[in-house]
Image 1: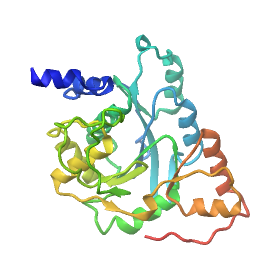
Image 2 (image 1 turned 180 degrees about the vertical axis):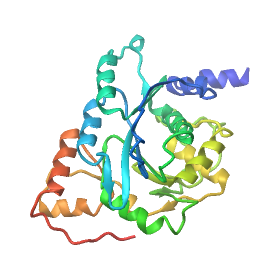
Image 3 (image 1 turned 90 degrees about the vertical axis):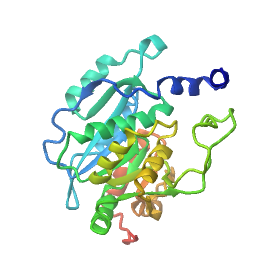
Length: 302
């Protein structure tokens, strides 16, 4: 009775999470068939949502192109959950089918896609990766509203991979956070979910990790209950594995500035990734960085 009373007092979105947090057996509705055929070594796993067609297309036209970057063959895959017409979402099935036929780079699972289910998206992707893309050695996990400097990412991998091949988990590490106890906050965490300070975790923006870590994370995730915040959940899993995430300054995410003169373009060229305001800004930035005559000093520092 006490537990039930605590449940009914939770915010509605937390109730929805609690009601489904034990279930992970979701069908894969769309699965790209051939995107690992070229033997990619670096897989860019980008979380998206069904309506974000324009963001995905902008990524395909810019940093998400399949090809060789540095010494690595790179491929992008988009991770999606479902959105249901009975809940008021428009029916985008036909558009999604067209996108799938043309690009073959989507993974769509039949679960309700929302902010609290991003953890589920991570776990399902890790499960899928277990039996797919055997050539992949490194995974970059990010969102569809960022610009990734793939040249800098490939250079980073070459510089650090040989040092920590079996425990490679890099990002902008957060280490002083504790659960939010106010129900007015969207990411409110019920007191019985986690009572201590969170273990170190990689904050939003992007995460780079090795295939070996992906395997370990998936195996431990089968024994760790899902958590409403995806970044913190992976941090909890890493702590169970006794792996400490590594931090690099280049993983601090920056915002895109409208004033993209030559000086600012050089600043962007030295960043690993940026938040972008729109697909238009992403394409504009990409073209600007590749414009002839824009010369920047190499300031890539680890």
